[in-house]
Image: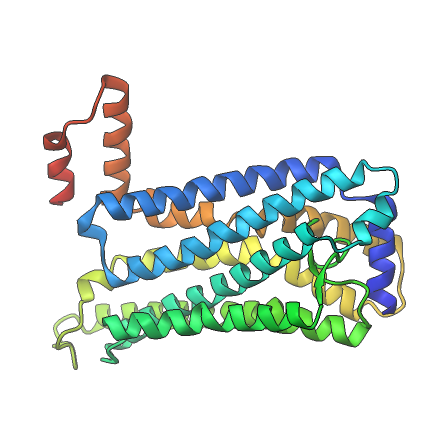
Length: 337
């Protein structure tokens, strides 16, 4: 595996910079906290318990596991980097490495699947298509697809012994697909266990955003026309998401694109082993180390801090914590907005 092995050897000898792990830990911790706040506000605010919010809960669970797994991988890398034989130890796929790879691989894929599920739901709402996807059976179907497929793919991968140490090839210091595999095998598994679904998610969310903006413009232009096929369609739930989907798409691309660029550079750089490629990979590695673990925090930012009801509730809780125990009568008006 010429190109990827060269990159692996270079990373092993040069190591991931220490400050990169500081940024990685910051993004992991903030994502874990952000996901916990999303769970907490959902439990505390009945008014926001819509179907799209339930989908967001499953997305947040996947992002939580992904951030926790990357945190474990970063700690493992820093520990092994300081051992007597760091290159040998970093190339060894121990139990912690394989377990972390299983968690982050399945959670990362699940995150893309749940993001796509939310995009499809928003698309159906914008087109006012009645599909029954917001029913209990629809939620079960979403879980079977968005959680089941990633778990199956990752289970097959671990059964075929392709998960393990990859010397930061395509990651930010955590384990993923073994770098000891052949070029073709590693590329196929990188696509199957992440990159293909990631790119599909990019395209789908971009399509949903374009259609959402088109529907909004069309709705404004024909404000007096009666909505077609609007029976049982809860437009009050989806309209506030029109602006949030833009922010979410931007955050998704800015956070996750770096790893995809690294992947294609490693695949298509051929026999070039120039210092420019190495410097580019280093910069992208730092950005990926932050971005791949930060999605949970930005979900919190978009769907909590940019949501008036949730933001007001969080602010009220912060004020009440300063003044003493919160009184429910002080928070009730917020719940009724």
